[in-house]
Amino acid sequence: MEVEVVVKKMDGSSVNIQDYGKTGKIMVISFWATWCTPCIKELNNIDEIYQDWQKKYGLELVAVSMDDARTSSKVQPVANSLGWSYLILLDENKDLARAMNVNNPPQTILIDQSGNIVYVHNGYTEGSEIELEEQIKKLIKP
Image 1 (tube, rainbow, N blue to C red):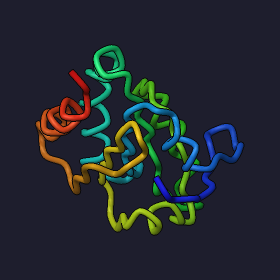
Image 2 (spheres, rainbow, N blue to C red; image 1 turned 90 degrees about the horizontal axis):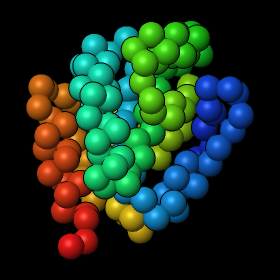
Image 3 (tube, rainbow, N blue to C red; image 1 turned 60 degrees about the vertical axis):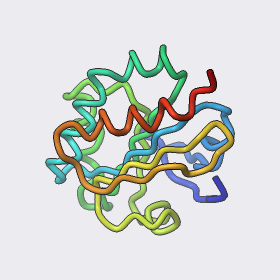
């Protein structure tokens, strides 16, 4: 992943998103916002199968909030109340969203073990996580 953008973790510390593209793991980056009902639904549905995905595929999901400074204070309460086990990052200025050509959430980006973007999905309909898993399976070497 050739994107070098610094975003914030929930604790306020900064992290370069490129660090996540160099883990050697399959990465899913999900852009979402607290005001986006389809985003919440998608991340809830993925959360139900996320531990299974971690065991089967060794992947990591990073949920990137596109909430701006006015609504970013809602991110942690929403994530905590839903019990998400994902790393949540804040992209208040939408620098990362711009760098990755994300206009509106939800948008899901799949990154292979080498850091290449291999699949992008815009929007969410019930069952989109099944298509995402099919894409993840293609990255697993037999």
